[in-house]
Length: 86
Image (cartoon, rainbow, N blue to C red; front, side, top):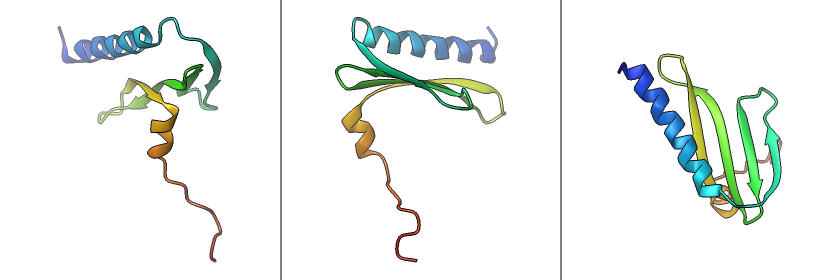
């Protein structure tokens, strides 16, 4: 099996595993980024499922998936106020 096919198969497995983690949970909301490169599900228990497409080192599209809690997401964000102090 070519390396490209193995990478695509691994991407699909990651998505399947992420979907299995959220099975049976209530979806409270969803959003699609304006450039259609990211889809986000907000679940009732504070869990987020984010599926997106990004380019790899060779410029080929790569499927990305992440399952996180809202509090984990907020802890990793950096807030930068625009125009403050200038």
